[in-house]
Amino acid sequence: MTLLTGLLAKAVAAAATLTGKRFALLVASSLVATSGIVAVGASGGGTGSLAAAAAQALLEEEPAAVAAAPSAEVTPTPSPSPSPQPAAGGEAASSGPLPSPSPAPEAAPSPEPEEPAPPAEPELPEAGPIKHVFLISLASPGYDAAFGAASQMPYLSATLRPQGVLLTNYSLLSEASVANGVATLSGEKPTAATQADCPAYEKCLYPVETLTLADQLGAARFSWHAYLEGMSDEAGKPANCVYPAPGAPEAAVPGGYSPRLNPFVYFHSLLDLGDCATNDVPGAELAKDLKTADSTANFSYISPNLCNAGFHGQCPEGTPDGAATADAYLAKVVPEILASPAYKRDGLLIVSFGAADPIPPAEPAAAPPANPLKTGALLVSSLAAPGSTDAAHYNPYSLLRSSEELFGLEPLGAAAGAKVHSFAPAFTAANAGD
Image 1 (tube, rainbow, N blue to C red):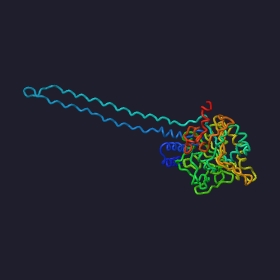
Image 2 (tube, one colour):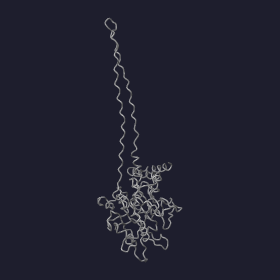
Image 3 (spheres, one colour):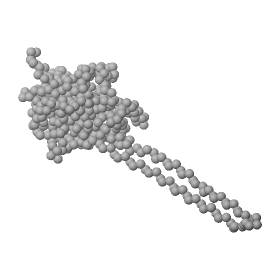
Image 4 (tube, rainbow, N blue to C red):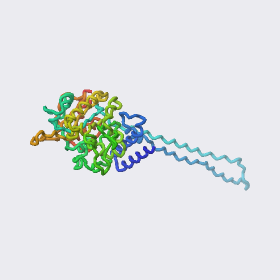
């Protein structure tokens, strides 16, 4: 109970600054993080979030019935006895016994108070045909190096590309990982700090009022997990939700896990209320969770370590790095996803790029890519037209908005912009032929 009390206290303190719809959404999601931590040992997890259950419990709590005040008892008041009239001769005439007064009618009993009608169960968002999304985030070598004729990623361009839809005009907002990751998760625009990949971690933390896709999913009873390859504590043991202590520099192992690849650790709404500690896990957990559809989250965010993501100079000396390493990572992980029961049932795989890391030119005089922010992205699903292309302009806000629309959620932040395109309509029931 001590843990539960502490987490509830955090939820109350965090929610005290919120009002309206954002309050309701945060209360539901934060209670779920609390309940999820308490229940995880007993239930072993599952695809459904406990958030809406907590919200429903709050909504169904009935006010105590107010007992009706007892009616005052009415005591009959006897009629006054008539004064005897003197008879002729001055004596009082005998008129027999006086009649008894008629009793007053008894007061009608007060009606029992009616029980208040139970509140209607809140309507929750519903997912469309796609109910399991897998988002892989890599470092981009440039559009041509990924998808062009001279691609440095043969698995992505030659094996996976014919199975899905290529977003030919997908572009990043910045070359930095944090700026794009934060936008993909919350719709927050890049800042000077996030575009510098947050050298001072505490300066990039967003307040509890800033909600994320993870908060939305939890409140709507959808589950989510983030899988970060190589995430471990200071002792090198696998650990959840790892981030630098305030004021401390990032202690990233070369080629290993880095918080800048983990956008979930930059939001107080996830840190303070327990969601990050529960759902932000080491990448090795993915293979276990993919074994059944019930153990697979509705939304899975997958990020390899610095080496396997494709950042140059992050792999052991003498081994491949950059695009070649990222492609090898895809060749290992993607077949596991495509073979999983959840993907086969109703899944969508998104291979995207969350940072720009162009291939260094072979010669110093060689020109860099014309537009390093243009990276492209790939969508693979049984509902997607194999080998097709989509030339609309997409960006990280589009990833967020599309993910939200797939699960019936409202767009957050800049994802709600009128010019932000969504690819979700391509997977609606109407367009899927259902």
